[in-house]
Image (tube, rainbow, N blue to C red; front, top):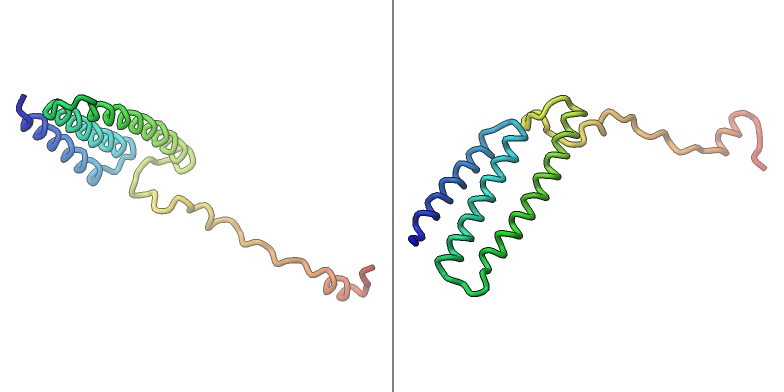
Length: 127
């Protein structure tokens, strides 16, 4: 098997993934682009494992690890996208400038209470 064919295919897949990551505004499409890039890495791992004829099949083991990481990434990513869409009403990446936008709307905490000054102003003493 020639190593050039899967390597070129993986480079094309990775390039398409990078383009999708940089050009898309929809969060779901960005996550799909990251998955495409991870699949290009998996293709390279398997191709080099077959080309080197490794007895331990390290490329296949790393591919299984990468698939596990990709599954966890897509699960957490979709959960975050759904939460952001429910709170903001959009999944547009450009409109999500800061995740803590709501923190600016919360009023500042009140000054600590000075009980002695409060009591003195009302003509009382603290006992």
